[in-house]
Length: 464
Ligand code: DLL
Image 1 (tube, rainbow, N blue to C red):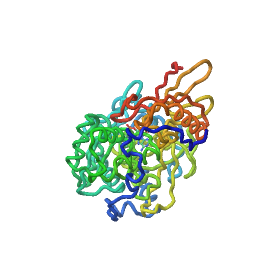
Image 2: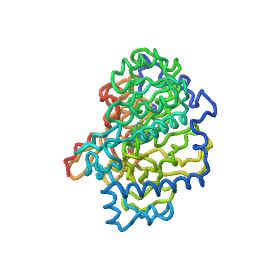
Image 3: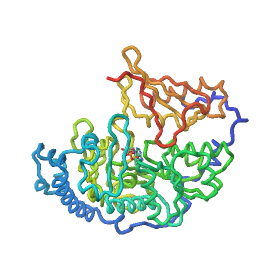
C-alpha cells in the first residue's frame, strides 16, 4: 500500500473543518518589524563574541576551580589547571560535568557562592533517585529574566503583548523562567501554570492573549479543549506560541499553527544551565539562536566524548560563562543536535542549535534500529485520519524488543477506516525510520492528555 492510500473513510458529519487548509493559519508572523530586545548584543560580530567568550571563560574557570571542590577534584584527576587554558580551543582538555555530579553533590555541593547568596532554588524530579537542584543569585535571576526577554522578543513577542504562560510554576524552571522574562520584556503576563485546561481556554479568550507559552503537548491539549468547548482561538488576537521543554516535530508545528491560528516557535533550555532562555527560533525559523555571550556551545560524540566540528550531529555540551551560583563547565546535556555558525537571514550572529532530535537517554533500540520518539511523531502527525495523540509502548517479547505505537484516530474517521490507517502508519514508520512497529489505532480521547511534559514512552521491558 502506498503512502497516499486514500481508502480511509471519513465521517464528514464529525468533521468540523479542522483539516481544511483554507482555514489554516498563515505560517508567517502578522507583526513584522525589526524590534530587538538587545540589538547590539544580538548582532555583534563573531570575532567580538569570541573575544567576550574568552574573557568570560577564563574568569568562570578560575572561579569554579577555586570554589567548587568536586570540579577541582575532576580537573586534578585529569591533570589540568586553569592556567592550561590558553585559548577557547583548550576547553576540550577540561573535564565534562554530568547530571550525576549534581546528584552526587545533592543538594548544594556544586554551588560556587555561600548558600545565603542563593535567592532561588529550582529542582527537577528526575525519574530515579535524588532530584537535581539548581540555584540562582540575584545576578543570576537578573540574567535569566534578560535572556528570556531576549528570547521572547526574538521569537516575535513585543512589549505590550498579553503573554499567557502555561508552563508549570513551581520547582520546574518553565513557569517562573518565562514569568520573569515576560515582565522584563514589558508584557502583561498571565501566570496560568499547567492544568485547569477549560479555565485556561476561557482566560485565553477573555484576556485576549496574544502570545502563548507552553509545552507543545499542552498547547495541543488547549487547542483540543477550545475546539470541544466551541471557543475559536483562531478568531482572536493570539498570534504566537513559544513551545519547548520537550522534543516536537515539524508536523506538530503545522498542527499547532493551524489549530491555534499562530506562528509556532521552538524554545530550548535546561535547568542545569539556566532554564528556558538558552536558545530560541527567530523569524527565519531556521534553527534556534543560542546566546553565546552567556554560553559556550560544543557538540561531542555521545559515545567517546570527542569534540565534533560545527555542522556534525552530536551531543550538545554547554559551558555557562556568567552564572554565579551554579557555574557549569562542559555540561553534557544528552541532547542530540548540530550547530550552525553560518550567518542567519535575521541578522543575528549567535550560533544556531538545530531542532533537538531527542535525548541520547531516550533513544530506543528496536531490533537493532536506533530511534527517538520524535521520529515516530514526525512520521505520524499529519497523516489523514490520525490525531496527533500517540504513545510508544516498548516490550520485550521472546528475545526481541517490540514497539507498539498507540495512535488515536481523528474524530472524523469512521472506525471502519482504522485498519487501513494502521497499515498506512506502519508503512510510513517502516519506510521513514526502518523499524517494524505494531500500530494500535484507538478511539478518540483514549490516550492521556499532557499538562506539561508529555510521557511519550511506556517502557515495559524488565529492568536490566
Ligand atoms: O525544560 C526548561 C525549559 C522550560 C525549556 C520551558 C523550554 C521551555 P528541564 O526540565 O531541565 O528544563 O529539561 C531540560 O528538556 O535537556 C531537553 O532534553 C528537553 N528540552 C527542552 N527544550 C526542548 C526543545 C526545561 N525545544 C530538557 N526541544 C533538555 C527538545 C527540549 N527538547
